[in-house]
Length: 120
Picture 1 (cartoon, rainbow, N blue to C red):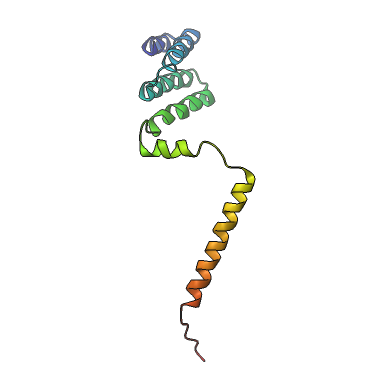
Picture 2: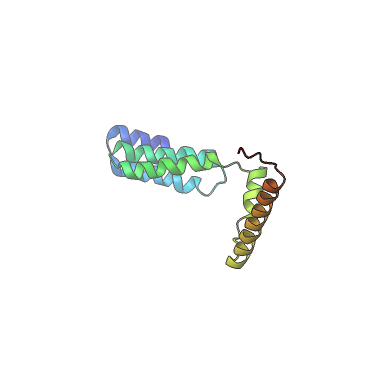
């Protein structure tokens, strides 16, 4: 369908080009193929770009980058899955306080164990 959209771009028919491009996007968005989704989003961006809708084109171009940027099944996706639920404010504050105390203790220990030679 995106090829048909490019054909209508060449013919100068804006409405049909946008219609075919968005239809292709609707069909592809139901699949799990990130690469195909990226190509179709790029196509929709190209359609809008050819008809001088630059801001809308940039929106679709940026969306086209995202499916390619994130790996599907990797250690990174599993790690990101662990952090989907945000901790409560109190848990965050307690962890932040623990990190500050540990950093101050380590900093004090590093200064305490060094011998400084002061020039007189």
